[in-house]
Amino acid sequence: MYTAAAADRAALPDIRVVVRAAEADLLNRHGLRLCPAAVLFIHPDLGSYLEATGASWHQVATASPERCRIDAQRSRVLREHGGLSYSLRHELYHRAQDDGLEHWQAEGQAELFAGAVPGGPLLSGLGPRDLDALLANPPDQETGRLARQTALRWVLDRP
Image (cartoon, rainbow, N blue to C red):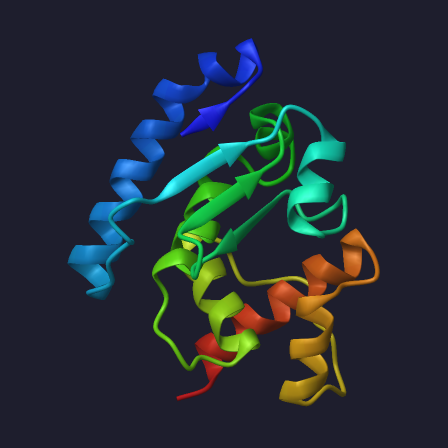
């Protein structure tokens, strides 16, 4: 785990608890493994995060399974936008997920693993490719939330 800010270093004990529990769940309940040299990089500021990930400001964390790395905004931001556990579990799932999942399946499974609760409005009139495109590049925070909620519902409803 890498962090530059003192406030984020203070959050490391909480982060370690979440990561250890998620790793155990991934292995024991899902039969998935994280790569052995996994890295969690908590960026010192938004600019650093955006430059490293190419993500939008409203995507508070991203996983790169091929690089065995999670990039995250400050721990305070994670806590404010879904919670530390939710954000880390979601991205840890992506780091361990099976190859070959469609984007919507991976997002729906990550939401389920993170503890998201289905409910509320969904996006309608979309096919899998449409939803994949919205998940990959949501135009705004609310559309991203609705797309993840829709992916969760699809995972729960489809065989």
